[in-house]
Amino acid sequence: MEKEIARLTDHFIICGAGRVGRRVAKEMAARKISLVVIEKDPEQARWAQENELPVIVGDASSEAVLREAHIERARGLATAVASDAENVYVTLTARGLAPNLPIVARASEEEAQSKMTRAGATVVVSPYAYAGQRIARVLTHPKVQRFIDLAFAPVNEGGLDLQIEEVYVAERSRLEHLSLAHLRVGFGVIVLAVRRKAGQLDFNPEPEETVAAGDSVVAMGESGKIRDFARLAEQEAQSSLTDPV
Image (cartoon, rainbow, N blue to C red; front, side):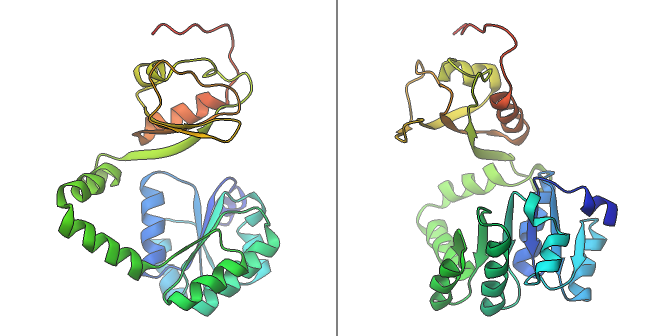
C-alpha cells in the first residue's frame, strides 16, 4: 500500500472514513478514479483496508500527513471528518499547501459554512440541506429524480453509469473544428453546453456549431466514453481531419 500511495498522481484525497467519506470513496472507486483515504481512527481506517483502498492512518489537518498523501500532485480534496471545526482545520492546512487545489468541505451547521469558505474551501456541502432538497424533489418530481438516480449510479448498483464532464479542447486538438453533431455520432456523447474561450457559455448549442482550441465542452455520456472523449480532446491531430457530418 505504501508503494501504491507513493505512485499516486492526479488523484483525490478523501479526509474521513465516516458515513459521508465512505460514500465519496465508494462512488469514486466504482468509477475507477484514483484516490487515497486519510483517517485517524484505526477502526474507521480498517473499512478502507478491507475494501482495498489506499489509506493513511493519521490526522488530515497535519501538513506531514497531507504531504504523505501527495497533496502537491492531487486533483482535488474532500474533507468530511468528524466535526465542522476539524473540517475547517483540514481546509486551512490543505489550502496553505496547495493554493489552487479544489477543496470540497462538509458542513453540519449553517454557521460553519462561511468559516469553511473563508478557510479556503472551494465548495461547502451540507448533507442535511442536500437531503432536504432531495426529499422535496422526490415528492414533487419523482420520475425526474428517479432518472437522475439511475443515470449517475454505477452499473454495479443498477445504474446507467452516465457522467457529465467539462472537457477542455487543447491547442491543435483532434476535436478542433469538428461539429457538435460529429461529437455525438463519432464519440457517443451529448453536448449540453460549450464554454467559449472568450468566456460566454452557449447552452444547448446548434448541432452544426464547431469547437475551437480554448473552448470547454460540457458533455454527458457513459463514463468510459467520456474518459475517451476527454483524452482525445488533449491529443494533437496526427493529420488533417475533416468533419464527415
